[in-house]
Image 1 (spheres, rainbow, N blue to C red):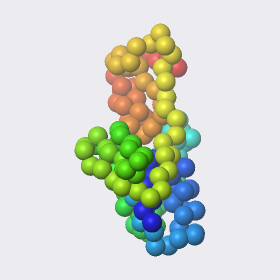
Image 2 (image 1 turned 135 degrees about the vertical axis):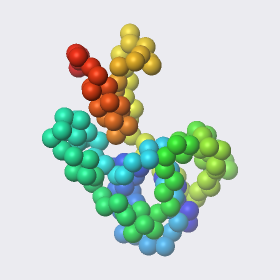
Image 3 (image 1 turned 90 degrees about the vertical axis):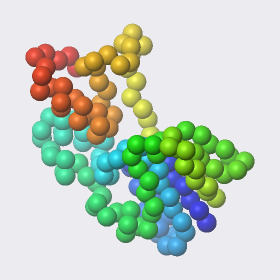
Length: 148
């Protein structure tokens, strides 16, 4: 059995743990466009505000995927962009394809700016992931004012 999980946050992690309770041997491949460790999105504002450091927002150990026998493909290029259900195949931005017997799409939500704010304006951010926090932290160093 080949299981493919798209997404590497809370739902994907919980799925891996549940699957491994029932089946220690099946193949699990996980795709994520985020290059970061497993972290709690709920704690991002605390990390941004300096209340917690980066290690404190992690919710699993760094070797989680190895211990769970999961092939993690993460980072630039691993965003799933095409799903072909009749072939049971997912293709990523980098052109790599992954076949599956079972597929779980655990990508969560996405942040959306109000309709009157165009995307790509320098200094306008959403707070959805660790990459967002890092970008905000860089901008804060040069900012004199902020609106939340």
